[in-house]
Image (cartoon, rainbow, N blue to C red; front, side):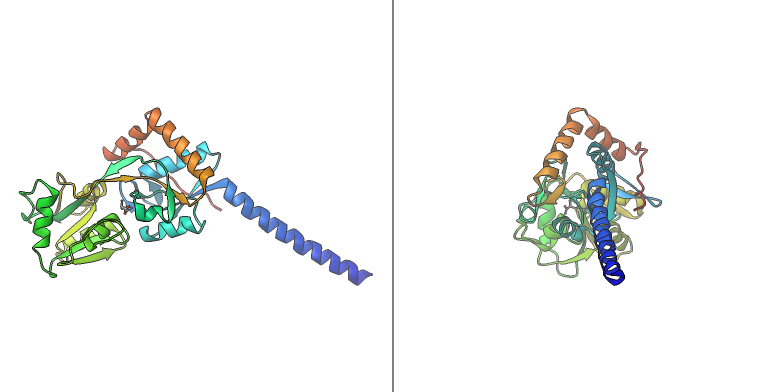
Amino acid sequence: MKKLFAIVLSAALLLGTAVAVFAACGNDSSEYLTVATNAYFPPFEYYEGNAFTGVDIEIADKMAQNMGKKLYVKDMEFDSIIQSVKSGESDIGMAGITVNDERKIQVDFTDEYYESAQVIIVKSDDTTFDACTTADEIETILKAQDNNYKIGTQNGTTGYMYSYGDAGFGYDGFTNLTTNGYTTGALAVQDLANGRINAVIIDKQPALMIAESISGVKVIEDVELTSEAYAFCVAKGNTELLEKANAFLKELKDNGDLDKIINSFFDGTADYTYTNPAR
Ligand code: GLN
């Protein structure tokens, strides 16, 4: 009898543990909005000391609060973000992500919140593109280079697709030259400054901010090589989160807060950082 009781008790304990673990998981996913990002993309997401900051982080924080949740930022390489969202490891991707048909096969996108473009960065004393006023003129010069000419881009980004070529993105690429992939845009610009590569192709606003922090390079900022728009992404079919995110985005657009957040990070007046809660 005693033995049977002990077995029943331990089974109950086991079950209890299982229920507790299950409940903890349940709480976890309802208590936090987990955001997949790559925090090396100023002014949209970057570190200030050990804290996160940037346009997307502030929007994410406000969005989480709006949903009655706490923000939990997951910093990862850019080309892991879509997989993290797809697998449910993160709820939403917020990383200056360009909306694109190829990506739409994998995830669902919210409404767009920012228009962007790729630009080229070269060494300050490089006059190759100084006279260019159109993307065509820059592309003609790039097509005339050989494979000793190296362009640095961030892995998995539009800049990489544009330079290397990607049928799904609709870019022929420059097969005559060499495209190098880096884990962050800043590492590519550092290699440019050190003379290891000839140019970097990256999103315009990050280009301007990264170039400001690394001396010896300049952005050909008046010539936009692509025309893109950013949105957030959720797992395919997660209409509940998609609708909530869209409703919140609309509110931010309508009340002017979206513009205020973007402007504050562009002009350097932003006073905002975020540290993940312990969990
Ligand atoms: N907008 C680019 C893309 O979606 C780059 C984004 C990034 O590096 N965070 O590919």
